[in-house]
Length: 92
Image 1 (cartoon, rainbow, N blue to C red):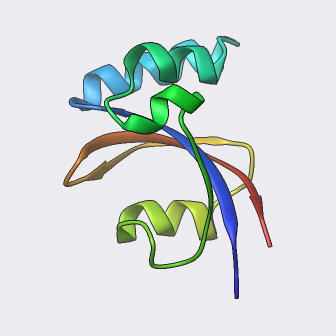
Image 2 (cartoon, rainbow, N blue to C red):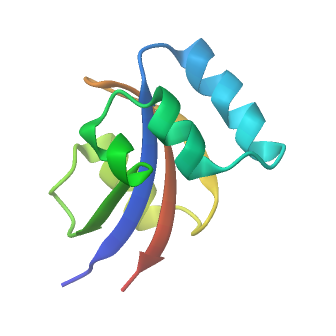
Image 3 (cartoon, rainbow, N blue to C red):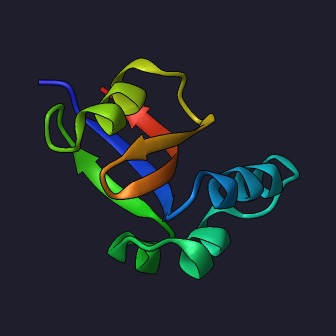
């Protein structure tokens, strides 16, 4: 079965996600921004969600993790939780 590891930053608005994405693209540290701004409990781990399989996350999130390029910041991705910036660290 496929497995992946990803980290994310969850915020309430698309605008906030876009601003954070710009900061990441300028080289700011993902974990530092996640700890400061993310609404998810994973923020304590710098946004790291650990390893999981398909279907364990909501579909829009899964689609990014299992289908899009690795080590790229994807998003904002809208889910019922808010807007995510997602980086897939590895897939197997």
